[in-house]
Image 1: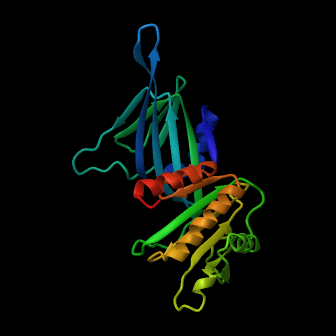
Image 2 (image 1 turned 180 degrees about the horizontal axis):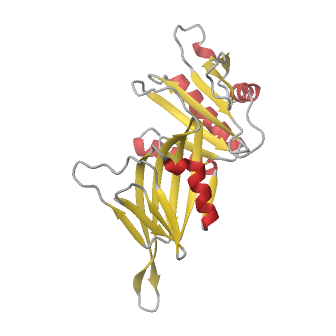
Image 3 (image 1 turned 120 degrees about the horizontal axis):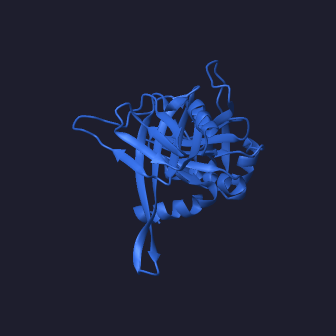
Amino acid sequence: MKCHVVNIEDLRWLLGHTGGFRGGYVTDVQVSKRRLLDEASGREVPAGTTVTVVIRYRIHQMSRVAKLTMTGVTDFSMFEQEGADCSTLGVIQAELNEGKLRFWFDPQGELYVVCDEAQLEEVAAPSLEPLSLEQVAQWTFQSGMPDWPTVTWILAELDVAGVPCAWRATTSSPGRHPAIQWEGDLIPASMQGIANIAGVHCMLYGPLDGLGFGMVLRVRGVQDRRTGQVLSLLADLIARRFSGQCLVGNTIIPGEDWQNWKSFEQQRRGDG
């Protein structure tokens, strides 16, 4: 989802929707300064500053990654004293004063931004069980489209792509999040019969915030080449078929840019 924050009503919505990011933490802060060439003087002149803050937080049993992009920044402060950590949030404070948005991301003002406007981009998913002790490859997709992928569609697309899989549905439990529509594991046909095969776990949930759906794909433990291929291929199929946003780690990527981003990351790591 995306939302622009310009006036006081937008600001109230932001704080209400996020709960002021209570209990969250800042994962990334980026500062970008634009400069343009003044042809008359032949010098470069400042043309605006943008600050982007990425926050992970939980609300209403949903894990959310929010990217708050603040443009027209006129004042910015990020200061950590020795032993202090301004990444952990209690609840942010914000106000609109004389046409300027002011954000305090911690009570001490160690992370503080004054700007003309802000844009919120966010990807949300039902809170998953802690996996800190496991290596996990995970891809999350969120779309505002009213239709969503079905298991039948996924199996047919993988079959056409030459990577046939079997489906193993997950039994619904009493504590399962009510937004989850279906979930289960994709097992590559070439791996059927092998003991203790986890496959690619798929979970579809929605609607979120009134519209659309979300989907999480992940492989637990050591990623086998074949399960990695299924995850990558299915992510490509979904991003091409449905408009939306992808989440990898703490990075939110427009769905239409997914292929380019993936190719860049593969080249950077030397995988391709």
